[in-house]
Amino acid sequence: GIEAIPSNIHQLPFKDRSFDVVLCSETLEHVTDYKKAIKELLRITKNVLIITVPHETPEIVEENIRNKVPHGHIHYFDTNTLNYLEEDGYKVTYSKTLSPLLVVPRVI
Image (cartoon, rainbow, N blue to C red; front, side):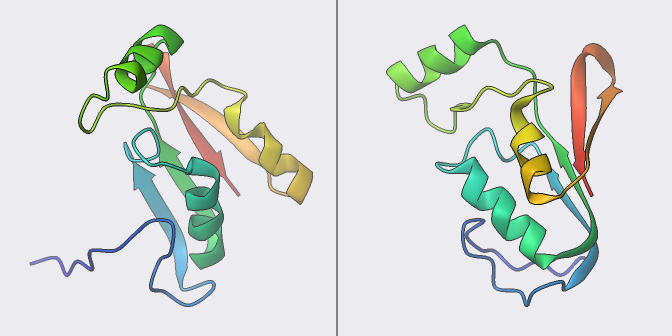
């Protein structure tokens, strides 16, 4: 019973500031240009963007890329990856989830 709109995360079909809160869960590690995707997510967000990503090692990500693993993780994220957004005036906070090795970046 949930309405869905399949779309390209690099070019979302929503107006600027359409949503109070946007959740992007377990997606950015798969997309070709995660920075462009985050820019789009921020464009449609009024207040809070919540992002969840897995904690893969850089070696696993490199192996996925080298072996062209279908739907594999092609980006490595750590607790500093999204800090570049602070240069644009966003506040980035991280929260651990489920495991001490996992963190959830939250962009405000």
